[in-house]
Length: 502
Image (cartoon, rainbow, N blue to C red; front, side, top):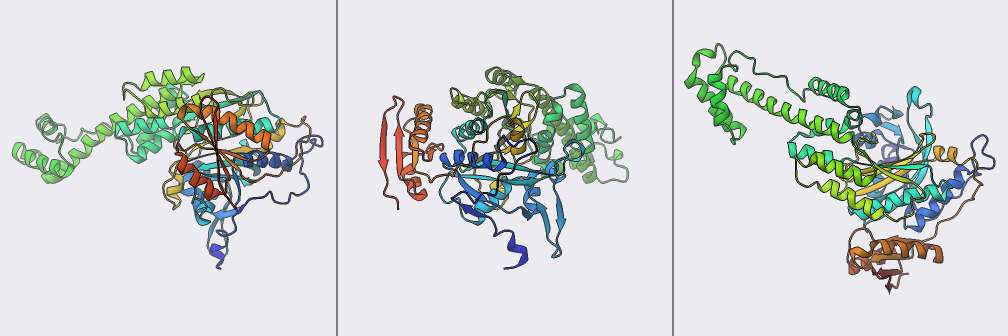
């Protein structure tokens, strides 16, 4: 095995809790929750929902994180070139590493695949963030694009804080990049322009001054052209007006030929030293630039208005629909977010208060849809967050698969639990049950039954979140070694299917 491939093969799947070192505590935390205690409790909770522990190496190829992580993450990475000429990085986050490990170890055979992890990550934070190393713990739910998957991860993220002793005083802020992607598509923005809009969402929340600054940056990046019909030839109405009428609906090549012919026949004296083809190309570029300028300006203005919307979920969603209805009568992204919020209604969120903030982003470019952050309302500390990243797996060499995940900032959580008693470590147990809603209306009842089974049986219970049939669930359970599938009906009736699993 070559040195170049060594770090690719270190990551492995673990189905048992590794041997824990002596409990590590922060200064002054002798009576509080330890780092290993937190990991043990979270591992037990995640395992009870069917999440398998996946271990990844600290040292990875830097390209793994740069490819979809975006410029902000790349600027905070601790990277270097080793003696063999390989560009490496200390792990700045887990998601890309988990995806790489799943692909290389062929873990995505049965979907959805639920992974959990924990360990140190490394980021340069400058003066605003003196930490160079901190610890994360989290999950990735790969292979389901259903709103149920989003709801499962969001509820689990809140329940994890409750398991660590944090109940109440936490704000669950929900955002969504989906409406911005829809807006870019409807306006016909280029991929580069779409990414520019997404990158500026959090700034656009600042209002008119930030909108003006974003437009100026778009000019600098040549995403908005200046009003360019100032060329003496192109400023002639006798040329431009007939062109606009004649080229509508034509492809670029035919439009260029038609413009050149019109110029030669109409006003050949304006050409000077340039050919009709050169003038035609220049005119097309100017017309295209004017169209792009209009689309980009409108996209930034609407994004600025959308980013300013925040509040109680129902009110924020209604306001967003009102803003975007001029672009389209219906937004699939907003419908989806509304369904996610509905699926969370009535669930135990550990006292967390849910709000929607369309100006919230997380600074990593691979997010594509619903995203969230958990914040302590008193200190303002971010306790964790995550979101949907449906394009990452395909970008890292796998087949396109939807996915949703989150990570906790464990040090920030420990800072919130200094007065809590040390709750000890707990070992996960193997999966045993898959709870299947028999109908769409039975989803919440199935979640209740799953929680009841986890408490009464003390064994992991997975929820079906992909909208699959009974036969598909039985096949999935057999492949995963799950011995029992329980159908749950809206009236609380249950039907148990036992599998002979060895």
